[in-house]
Length: 284
Length: 284
Image 1 (spheres, chains in turn green, brown):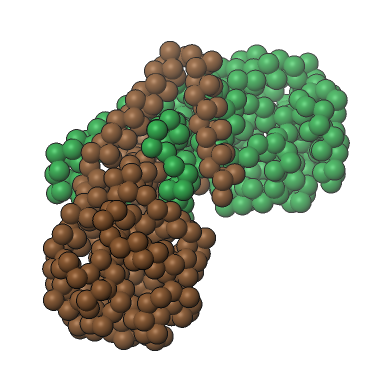
Image 2 (tube, one colour):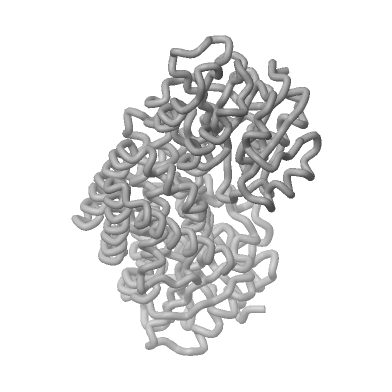
């Protein structure tokens, strides 16, 4: 049970919509409100049990103790500006963006009467939109909470309890540290998968008959919506570029060993990769 | 129904074992024989219905009209030398290796009384060994058949019919063409996934809590057995190196656009990757 009376979700797409479904099922608040940028999505939200749907973002946040921003990373600042006048004194405001340091700067537009604390649930899909929302999206998933250290500790505790009530496992850390973590485990893999997909698609030797499940898996995330990912990659550019440089270095090392016919070296690199990959599974 | 009376599988691991299970279930021959390098695997094969297990490869090929070599690519030549004395006159010999040009050279050790034609079923798993064999492994999967053009056309036809009887869809092309196809759709993705996994595992910022399904999918194939993959990558080195150069070029293009904060460019690259990836799915 979380300690919020009314929860508003502003920008209810895949993640925000799933927060509404999960909060409704788990009875995480006495009332729920929602808003989405698109009229079609607002229409869809009306079918979500127990969710009051508003035509404006500022209307949806009225009286909410917890306001969760689900808009893309590059839209968070303008969303915060839009809702600022309607926010209840003492409200906790959070977001679900995949980067946290830039969002902390965006949150400077908020009045001092509310508390902003970033969130990032490690859940999602290459499919976007409230139509793909699921009540169990956060079950057993890590949710990062990134306090700046200047806010009220009680707000951090309440936000953590809220995510736990949706089934998530919370991990607290600073925004910069978070961005470094997700750069290497999420943003860099996304960019690498996209680069691999481009290399395959651009090859004159590409023949779809030869495409197996390995290629499909290795490139699955490259099917993600580019308008979401472009803002994530650019908002975390320094860390992403550093990670891509490392991928390039490792790729060159393996390529040079293959070119030299160095069996011992190729085998030892593949073995190190296999062991690292297997340890990802055993950690699940 | 295929036109072979007796089929021998030499090196019955994941693929060879699955051929035996599928041939047994589909009654693709009157009798089946099998051999595996390891004693444990031979023991396991004895539990496969209708398969006669031999202690030597030369013993297993006796009287077989079709001999299928399932050993790793770098062991095919020595396997062919070992079975050559026991081969029936007129037998068709094939393999299931992931590269075909180097195998064609290996097959020069065979007597002229048999016909060698390469095969490559596009089926597998990151799991190796007969313990993971499945009777339906080839259902609906592409199987390349790579005649040299110098063999008896009837043999090519019989081999194609055999794979079709196991549920596969056959595609005929030259060995060199095949190697170019699979370099870009299989070998290059494997090496890229391994390089990505190494970059992630070697990063001081790697935190397993931040690892989601995206990273797991993008690196899944890197969990494959290195002793199988090292021989595949080295046997197809020229084509693999060319493909990896292209991945590197695409990675640099994306990285440079991110570094420059070039939103239009990053978005257009991600969009091209998304469309290419979605077309892989729609082709299934």
